[in-house]
Image (cartoon, rainbow over all chains, first blue to last red; front, top):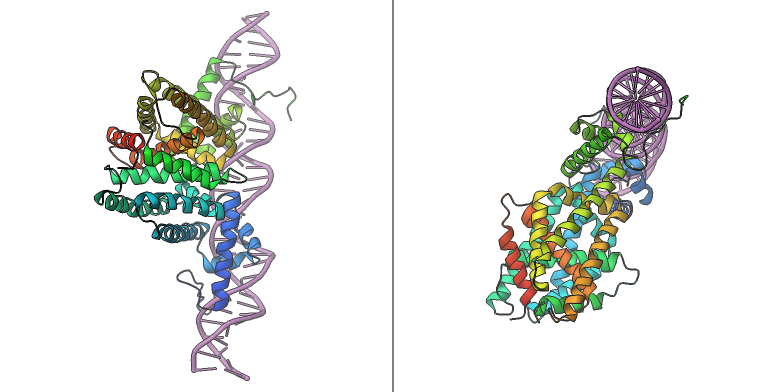
Length: 203
Length: 203
DNA sequence: ACGCAATATGAATACTGATTCATGTTTCAA
DNA sequence: TTGAAACATGAATCAGTATTCATATTGCGT
């Protein structure tokens, strides 16, 4: 117990420039370390070592290991939303948007493999964050599909199911053909997949 | 150290009837407990409690927590293989097989949610087992697609990419519309999805 | 230039849980 | 029936690491 009230910032952002930088360092280090070793194998000591700071400093910025993890999932949410939105801006219609969105997502996985892995691990580490991430994404996706159906740009069908099915394609192709591949050929994967979802399997 | 050489069965199956039963009890308990709490939250004590046996007994049958986990992933492999193979037997052509396979998979997820979850968690707990599971499945799947293409039952396209894309659909729909749903409507999900992959999105 | 809030430090604490072990009990082939 | 192999037990060991804390140092408004 201290004589003067101790204020460790367990809420809100740091007040000083240095504080903001440290917090960013820790987030970046956590992305690297947790993305590499996984949540349970990554220790706080690993993270602070990567961030070149002292162990105790971690707890000035985050309440727990779970909290910094959740922060990373939220960051992933902001990034993917922004990225897909931007990629889709130029698209003249929904089909083009599908192609552009898939390409953007796979490129993102190639750029930030650790974040991709972290979001997937969230299913087990922080199920609520995981669900929020995907349901909010799916909601927006389904809305777009409904709009496109109304505009006659795509065939009719249950937009929610389709949204999840299409997200499933992206997730799995990202893992198999980006994460597992030394030299991913994103263009080829996008073209093949686009052909399949456009034309279907019926000859 | 013991005076007479101690032989704990760290390899192969148990030699007695009782041993085989115990091992099966432990595997079942592990499926329940790990499927429910996740790998890191599930303790050996939890598993032996569920199996109604003593703590130390666990190590007579399995070298480690990782080993019993891997065993469950392998079991899932055997089961899904058998199940899909059986479901697809009756199918007159590849399209019908796709529908039947998706239906069988989603039904399996509904029946054994714990196993589904365990396989997904293997990505982080035992990446090699995870990869083996999906690559061997994908190999067989792609072979079927190539055969169907040659027979003119489906359109042309890269069979490997398609296999992974279709697996991705199943995985994700299983999670969203079976695991997350109180009363899953598997038929509806299968019909909608089948329509999408058959006809495609182009009007 | 002062002083309080904010930030930094890393040794010490506290707890969890995997694995081992010494010692029984049971099975089963000969 | 018997004895050696198989199996059962759970308290004790042992290692790892999340989190706390008492004590500095730094930032910054005034």
